[in-house]
Length: 327
Image (cartoon, rainbow, N blue to C red; front, side, top):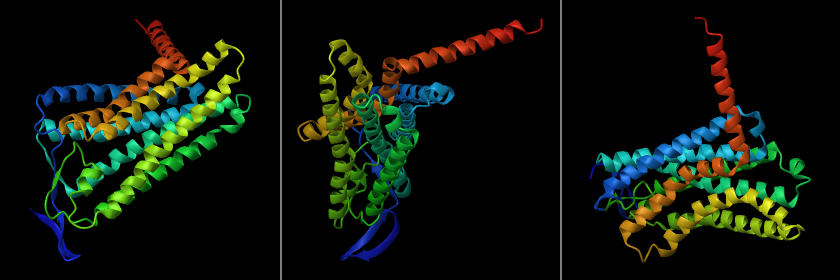
């Protein structure tokens, strides 16, 4: 194994490999059909999230705090898709299984930053919904642009800090035996388990990160919907309850799409086949960025109306140009 750096640490030779081997999809039957599926998901994710970003950017009526969070979600989903799917296809579709040490850490940084931000974005949207339903008369005074932008900036800083610490802890590990990562990308868990020296700090930080990125957001979202349910119970008419709850269906769909597959994989990962686990985990990673813009376009009346206005204005502009075009 080629080495970039060697030193003595804890009575073992410190080994930093020149490359890692990504082995996640190797050996899975008919896996090329799954890659076609990944290409389809990637195209829809890029088109859908780009469309949401363009609509919110062009329509001044969608500059509310809620749609700042939706814009950030679309940007994060676009980053997630572009950081993960093309590299996965390059690795397994074109047999480029070797990835350099530094490239692997960079790959990990962008993938995990976007994955973390997807969870944190759901927290921001959950906060927006609970404030809108519990304090409808004071919503505009409580939920301001400055507050939402501050929350988003804080979560970006938190996500970047967490993954920088995780990457920094990886650089202290010696990889003196295997360089084969049993995943479909440079996954933190399978990677630090290859270390020959003490991986306890990596394990502890990984557990802490899971709690901060999955446990705390999910607990906050569940708690917020308990508050929403309590507020809805105070509404006198059933029709008004349904009308208020409909404003939450899009967000609830996003929460289910993001958290349920991850919970399933981690809950039953030990009893299902390793190949099935890798496929399920990859679907749980790549599917939300594709479905999120579809859900918001189909279930959010403001975005649908904005699309109609923009398309109508574009058609009218073309008709005006055609009308005054000299013969």
